Length: 263
Image (tube, rainbow, N blue to C red; front, side, top):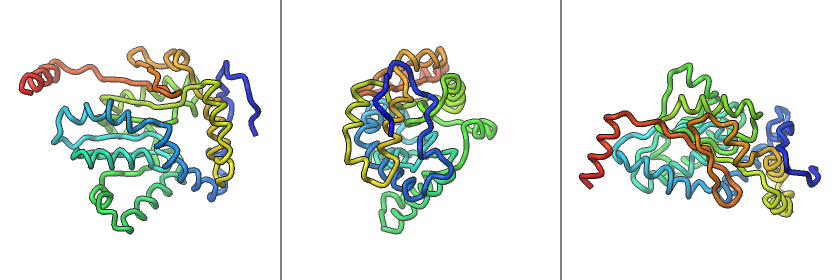
């Protein structure tokens, strides 16, 4: 158990239990299961979808929009983004990657279970979520490119120096990048530590959650390690968004202005 600690500096040396190659599969699978509920409550992706992603989709509603989810874990964020975009009538093609084969295997199994339960909405999007064991470097070697690259709770797993490399690779892969992560703050640590029911779910959600806060950044720290053309903003409560937008070409700027005039 982690004792209450000084949060003045990030504890990047800590290793989360779910990252252990020998982690019990029962606990690991239960952790992926818990992410489906916990991330929806605290990660604010519904707000991000509404205010950051929907404006991108609206630029060309008939376009097949390509999205990459880096470090997808059990696939919960990809699933919700697909669900929301389909409900809004957009065509979102999602590739979800993770370095951990166990996570990808679990995500694929969950999608198959949903299909077998005759979930027509997911059946429609079955071919729209491609789960892969891959890294950003591998996709760059394959010359892949996406309209939007996202990540959720990836940055705090990296060292300070690795953050810069990761963001640069994401920038090369996507026209827009949104990296969502925890903001290190004593209050968030205290609140999470007080969530005792999370300790009795036969998963790593409680122990790893507290470690994640200790390993996370402050806004100033993350901005320091981000490339110059990135902006780090806060999102209430206790979250950070690292955002990159590719500079539009002159033709794209003119097309955008023309669409605004026509509207």
